[in-house]
Image 1: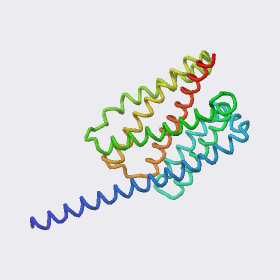
Image 2: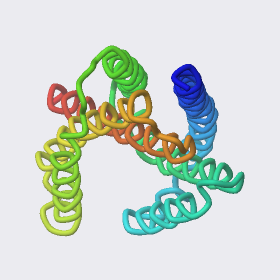
Image 3: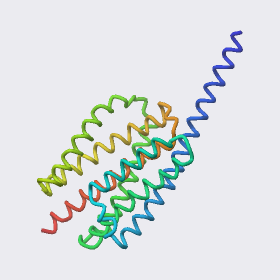
Image 4: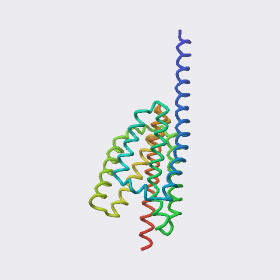
Length: 230
């Protein structure tokens, strides 16, 4: 009886570990492919940024949350993967105007874009290693990160509608960089340790944080470069 119970326990443990490794592997594959797709759409938008710029902040926000709703609704079907590529491709496409401005209107624009890309990769790699080796439960970060995200979202809207202050943009970008890095650590830890079961949702969560980090780095480096050129 005891031997049978031990056998069942080992089998369940092995089954759970195998399933989690499968989720992690599928997440990394889908994240890599969707990021590559986003890079392609960003390049197309970079060549002709007017179309992407026509969406505006609020049009982009509505499209973003609409695609998120579709992904949530179809997270357990193959259609959810198609919506993942739709979302990541759309977000990549919205990068075109920003990349075009930085590349053509800032003296070291290409270096800023390359540095931001490299910095995003280094942040992801560093946090992934830390989340893998750390035994800390980062669940306590959820409340702080949620409040920080809502606060920064409200500040960004107020700055767009009323203030339009460059210093406010820099403050918001710096805050988004820190909060997104915190969310990235939280989500990587959940994926590795706490048993995230849906690789579609995990992929979207990781991609959005990497997207935010990349944009924040571009904005911060561009602001610092512009201040030095004055």
